[in-house]
Image 1 (cartoon, rainbow, N blue to C red):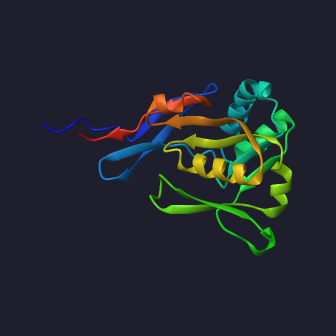
Image 2 (cartoon, helix red, strand yellow):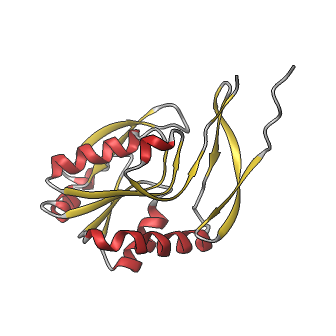
Length: 187
C-alpha cells in the first residue's frame, strides 16, 4: 500500500493573510512548504505589523537579518518599529572592509553558505540590543550564524523572531513567530 499523496501546496494563514505554499522536496522523501515573501507586499506588511506588536517590549536598538528573502520583512519592521536594520550578506565585497564571517548550512540548497557583517555595520551593532530576524527558521543553522557574528561584534541579542518556524515545534519555543510549518517525511 502506497502512502497517501501529499497535496502540491500547503494552505496557511499568516497575520490574517491566506497563502498556499508550494511543497518542495529538499531531499529524497523530505518535503517542506516554501514561504517566499519577495514581492508579496501584502503579506510582508501584515507580518511586520503583527511581529512589531510582539517585539516592542524587547526595547531593541537594531534589527539584524540575513540576506535575501528576509530583507523585505526587515525593512517593513524597521519602519513599523522605527529602528535601523542591518543585513548580513552572503558574499564578501571589497567595500565591506574588515567584515566578520560565519558559515551556515542552507536547508533549501543543502549547501554551506557564508554570512558576512560589513565593517560599517559592525559599528552599528556594537553594544546595541538586537533582534535577530528571519522569514522562516527551520534547522536553526542561519540563526546560529547570526548569533555567532553578533557575539563577535559585541551586540546583545534580546530575542529572535521569524514569520514562521518549521519542523520540531518544541525546538522553537523561544522564537517570536506568527505560525509554524511541519516537515513532511515519507515513511
